[in-house]
Image (tube, rainbow, N blue to C red; front, side, top):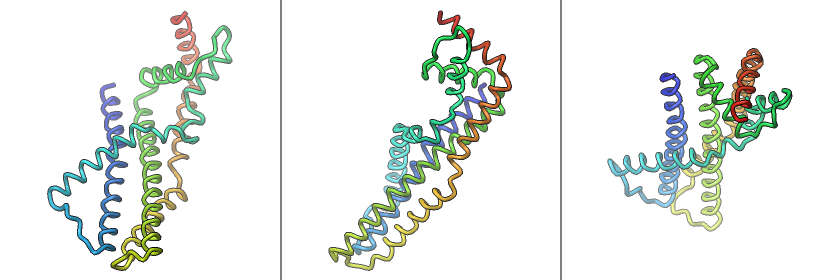
Length: 221
């Protein structure tokens, strides 16, 4: 259990660090591209630049983590094991309708106390990969759109002391990263595969699941 808790904490840290510093890296590259077009150098450098990069990455990572927008996507919400438990309880005699919050709580109880630890690593890993890849996709799109708008605006108004080449290259790379993430969308598929594996375990341990549901009901009663 301690090893699972440690792994869970590490994976949660990755969900903060990777998207946060990806955002910070793209922001820094965009600033360099814009400053190159304007003919000005970034005044922050050395240790100050490093500290700003660390701070921006951490703040961005915590902000993205706190929003939990990835959990509102269809690929995350469909076919959750907790929904299986809710449907299972509905089909059992003398069991009242289970609320979603109760179903999630019951799922985590089964996950932490009955599903083998070897499953935990896979659940944590693919869950983390899902959240990271979706945040990377969205961040790439934000910066691709922003860089395109800046380059287009400078081109239209003629406010570009130097060529827009660097800014255009940055926009093209950001768009490419976004499109590759969409084209080879393994995050959603792996998340659903992760759910199916857990549901399969629940189905194969049907007697245990029913016993836990009934015990939960009699305890609440």
